Amino acid sequence: MKNQVWIAVTFIIFLLLFTLVGIYSATRKQNTTTDYLLASRNVNPWLTALSAMATGQSGFLFIGQVGFAYKIGVSSLWLTIGWLIGDYLAWYFIFKRLRQISEETASDTFSSFLSHNIKGSRAIAVISALITIALLVTYAASQLVAGSKALNAVFGWNYNLGIIIGAIIVVIYCFSGGIRASIWTDALQGIIMIGSLLLLLVVAVTSYGGIGKVWQSLAVINPALINLNPSQQPWGFLPFFIGWIVAGFGVVGQPHIVVRAMAIDSAENIGFARNLKTGLGLVNSISAMGIGLTARVIMPDLMTSGDPELALPYLSLELLPIVLVGLMLAGLFSATISTADSQILSCSAALTQDIFPAVAQSYNLAKVGTITVTAVILVIALTGDNNVFALVTFSWSALASGLGPLLILRVWQQPVTFPTAIAMMGIGIATALIWNLGLHLSSAIYEVLPGMAAGIAVYGIVQFFSRSKLFRF
Image 1 (cartoon, rainbow, N blue to C red):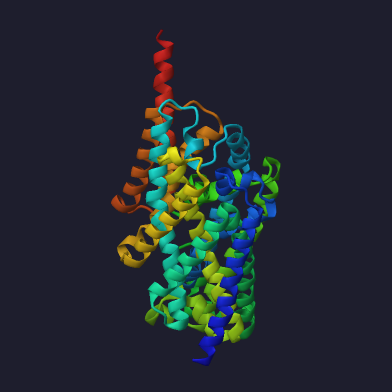
Image 2: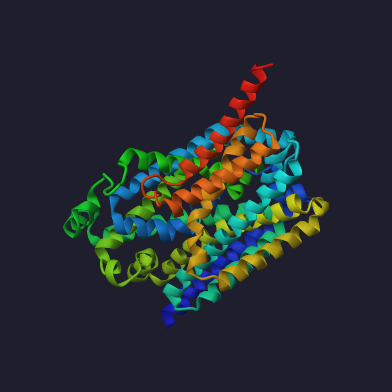
């Protein structure tokens, strides 16, 4: 009981620190919607990189990725490498131009950028905003649940308590400073994520006797755990790997991450932010994988009588001093709320700027939108069952497939008509959905690849027939 009190004290100190940083960021604010939504496009590249990393990796890093490595072994590295390659390519080819053109067109939101200068732009903005809200509210709710899952593992607290704590913290600093507060706190949370993962990895490997001994023990448990070649890939390794590269490239369809590229202080700083984000993300991912592998040899019973996704908090309780357990818990909670806050603000922007443009210039109503979205997400998190939260695994794919191809065309300033834009969004999402839930082929190729390919194919077909018709006259 005494140990739990000290863990809670340390954890609460970090939560207060996040909140105070978010509130302090409000001292730099301007009472305009552009400042609330994009921090006046003046965010330092260091903060951009840390924020984008923390937002993109989310609670999946501490929960899902650790558990994935625990179960399948070192071959989980290929998922990380593929994802990082795709993400890097998106930042390299898309985000610099996005920063330039979004400012030139005065586009403050993801949907306004997609719809700019297209006949029927209002409908495109509304539809893309509805897609954003529909998918991101469930995604954000799942982040709050992931955080509460860790609190339950450490303290035995009711799941609802962790959900409510996360929602309150997020709404306090987002309401105070908008995206600037989100980015500043994300940056701090990103640093804590890096430090906590590296700390646990070093302690765990050292306590077991070093990397060599961990490797040997994995081979004894199951030789497949140390095999870099992923086993049981229905169509082989290459399609599997390419699918995860495209999944990483699918960041172009994630409004809550794309907006960070729109908010950086200069398009020329995108390259620095990209390189820093990629390097730090690689450190985090490898650390999470190492923790999962080490947990497999230290706590092998989780495979049969526990939950491998809780390997990190359980390992922390077993190996770390009480104060450092609080740090690990703060790192895990940071990963969840750094994503949830970004998704809440993206939904708020879609609601107040794109769906109800009459209130678009009202700074106060933009803040009301944040509270409204948070309330909806809180209700979903508190009342949703496992079937609801299973949808989060599809949210990234659907956003990438539905919005990603259109964003690419708009960044490269290709002409798009209203019917084409609507068809690209609808067919992209439908293809990803059928691939995943209808054909059950996601284990062979992650559904982002066929989903984005379908959206781009729609545009290619329309262009082909348009030119053929033109040539006949």
